[in-house]
Image 1 (cartoon, one colour):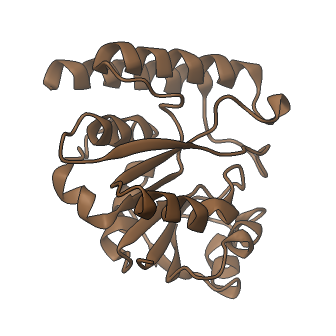
Image 2: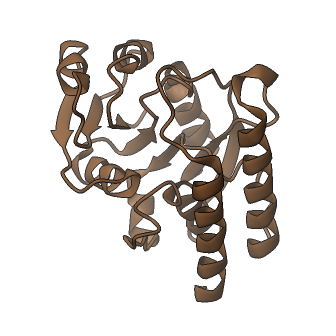
Length: 225
């Protein structure tokens, strides 16, 4: 089995980060927490829980993940959020699925939800709408275009030109990386269904503002391909 780096971008996730780190199964090479200007005890708690913490001063989900990718030492990278909504205990299982099926990139799909109450209705509608838009614009058949949990070979990044624009610094990266992986003939792509859990701590997502921003970015990507 190839070595696995678990990358967790974090901004003020002190309420949940220890639980997330504790749920990562044994056998991974490292747990790498990217501290994106947290003003609480996120970094301290992460170190105490056994993670390696690296700082990223440039604010945003995209820069935080890019920092994690640069610093990851494993052959396979698994991404998680620090709010405990994604299942860390599935990391090795999905990595084994990737290796056994000779894949390069696996996106963890939350839909259909196992627990209907794990996501507010407004977010369900937004996720469905953006997934439909992604499939129509790029001729794909994704179940979940917005998932923030991915397991992929680090070498796959060489075939993806991920942008660092103002749009992609935010949550738009969650759809950009999947679109670039799924539409690239050099990358073997698949989805893998996962359970999804209610968030611990306060959400930083604004469904209307961020949803509209992500839709505009999808259209911009389509025009650029």
